[in-house]
Amino acid sequence: MTANVTQLKSQNSATLTDNSSNKRIDFPMLEGSVGPKVIDIRKLYAETGHFTYDPGFTSTASCESKITYIDGDEGVLLYRGYPIEELAEHSDFSEVCYLLLKGELPSASEKRKFEHDITVHTMVHEQLTRFYQGFRRDAHPMAVLCGVVGALSAFYHDSLDISDARQRMIASHRLIAKLPTIAAMAYKYSVGQPFMYPRNDLNYAENFLYMTFGVPCEEYKVNKTVARALDKLFMLHADHEQNASTSTVRLAGSSGANPFACIAAGIATLWGPAHGGANEAVLQMLQEIGSKDRIPEFIRKVKAKEEGVRLMGFGHRVYKNYDPRAKVIQKSCHEVLGELGVKDEPLLEIAMELERIALQDDYFVQRKLYPNVDFYSGIIYKAMGFPTAMFTALFAVARTVGWIAQWNEMIEDPAQKIGRPRQLYTGHGRRAYVPLHRRG
Image (cartoon, rainbow, N blue to C red; front, side):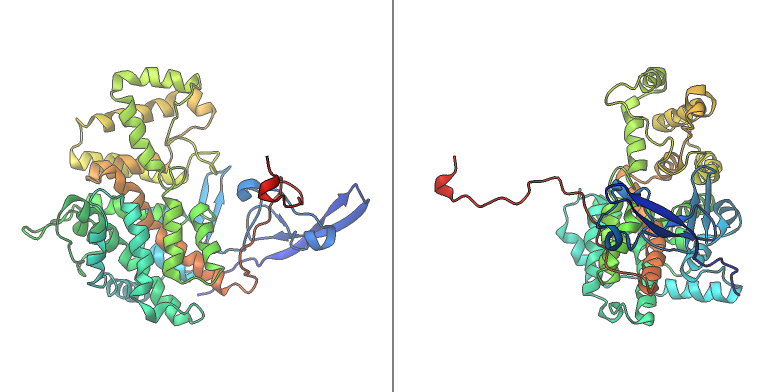
């Protein structure tokens, strides 16, 4: 199969005028397949002696990519050109993994082979089980994931050569396969239960649920509704363009670091409450509200912009419209709650009331403060029985495939260079050293 993709090309130019010297310089305008045009400023410093200033890189394209496209104004998310809504409705996580890694949807035989290739790597080296004993029982799961994933490079020396395409593929399969096992082991360690070995007869989401909640003394029966909802959440979180953690993986990878170290760096970045920890923050907000009868007062404080009162799980940095992932998972959220018979859980009651208000109150609607994917994912994870501390680890399990796809794309990009952002220096100019006995 071949994809009809518009190649990156020069389209007209943008002219910069330096008023101090009256010099005019033309910079090429690059046009991708969709999205805004980009001004190519790679020669800006050489031509002008100036840098650009863009904190957070919110107006800077750091790379060329064919993987994920977001239109925040229209509420669009595409994986390799496919709308997330269609993939969530008709596909599954393993197929989405293949799509992100390979660029095309698999045939039936390709899908079976890919699932087999992932399944054979789900076990971790037995010595890694001892690694967990070095952590306190109350260690945050993300701390455990950072350490264990980084340590994989000490166990799998046959997949560290990033110049070897086959070794990159093996490392990719290992990371996608082992992250659920590592995350489930982190949970088991925290509750003092024995680790559960993966089962090859279960799919990706089912196997993760089994390793997390199964015990050796009785048979674990997978709830298909819960497994499908988790599979869908994994799909929705698989990739999201050049976000903080993905940019970190690319930046680490640009130095030539091994894939396990790069993914560990991505996990560390994802841990931040402004990124992957957002759904954890949602549950903390609900706990602070405490009960449904306190919601009106909380909403009043939100509208009054009182200090310390934050509405978590509403709106999005990129999406200025309804988060398309939230539209997909909203239905699954109510299905899971109905399937599990969750009716008297106070936090979930508070969450459902907040959702009702957000979809009807003009204050929220006019400001486009719709519930986002973090709002619904936190509710679902809690209903499934995951402790709040595990929420970000679940995000990491899903996002690993996106990190890997982006990392592979970066390695194969001939224009790739080691990341080296510039700065606007505002410190002291050159100063003469003063001997200690002459100071003060």
